[in-house]
Amino acid sequence: MAVTRGFVGRRASARDPRLPPGQYDVGSSWPVLTAESTPSIGTDRFRLTVDGAVEEQVTWDWAQLRALPASTWRGDIHCVTTWSKLDTWFTGVPVDVLLDAARPLPTATHVMVTSSTGYTTNLPLADVVDEKAWVVWEHEGAPLAREHGGPVRLIVPHLYFWKSAKWISRITLRDSDEPGFWERNGYHMRGDPWLEQRFDGD
Amino acid sequence: MVTDDLTRAAAARATRWRDARVVDVTHHGDRGVVLRLDVPDRIPHRPGQHYVLRLRAEDGYTASRSYSVVSAPSEDLVELYVERIPDGEVSTFLADVVEPGDLLETRGPIGRWFVWDGRSRALGIGGGSGVAPLVSMLRHAHEIGRPELLSLAVTARSAAELPYVDELRAAKALVALTRVNDLPPGPTRLDAAVLGALVDPGATVYLCGSTRFTLAMETHLAVGGQPASTIRVERFGAGVAPG
Image (cartoon, rainbow over all chains, first blue to last red; front, side, top):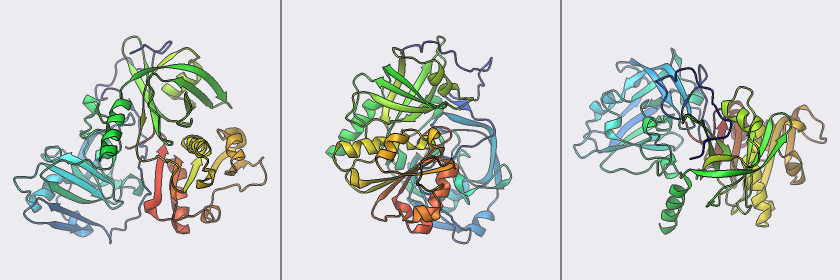
């Protein structure tokens, strides 16, 4: 690895310990990165289903989802394109609450999350339980904007943010792993920012 | 399946870091810089793919960003277009400091979604530096003798701010200049009427530009009847590829 001639970099005197390796602080902005055309999903048409390896397939509409006990997660999010957004917060419901309703079978090891656009992303089940993942409808007190996945998206803040599927419509429990959209298209199967698991082969 | 395995193997090889030598640095206007890199053990890219450049300080501090490839797969050097963002840590260094002979850490080519292989009809729509991957597609289309497969519509504030303006005009791209329309005749905006006339449900749309630009174009395309499933988008503001 070559040192880049003349490069010093723009570091704060001490690098913020909340930034994983290779990431920079984007400040108060929030870049929008999606691969597909942005859908417009009215709350009247919104449905979220948990299915696959579960004892009971369950579907929530907007009113049913909003009637669940809401809570707020606050922390840092990290995009594989190297920006991080520090100390931000989202309001929604932990994925645990949805899984408790559908009761995953003991054989379930992974989930495939699907968006209304057809976007998919795969995650180990262990990465979406124990309050590590939320289905959210508010960002910093305001309804989640359409370009950020509104009305409802997934957040899995401890992994790169492509795992946090926008416009979530389905969580499918599986007994094996299978690549989702970006995972088929060159990105890492798990995406831990602290291990810099950006691309296939990292 | 075999093809898929080969693709995965190539992708794994593409994500290895390599020290590329800067062969040529060309400034375009006051914001653009074109880098041509000699990448050792280079894997041919597919038009639309990108490379990651990583800058490394003596103490090991690094900063990396992704840039779309402009060159055609058949070209020997990898050409990248960098827009100099006034406060950008990486782009200002690439624009102001880098010169021929320097080594830059690179990995790539990356991405298998925003790619066009020249086998079916495509409509490329780009705003500002978002034209970069479309120029790669354009060069590839000419290279393989199928220029008729690719239609292009691009926009910028003025001709001076449109990268590769001469190449795009020579290819009969539809050019819309929003502030200084000094290349008549042409529209001043890619609005609903202009895009509506370009709608082609049988084509794949490659849309690249800022968030605001791409959201506006998506709306015009939807109104014109372009199926959402045919539209592939690359938005920037912080890089390329997923969030």
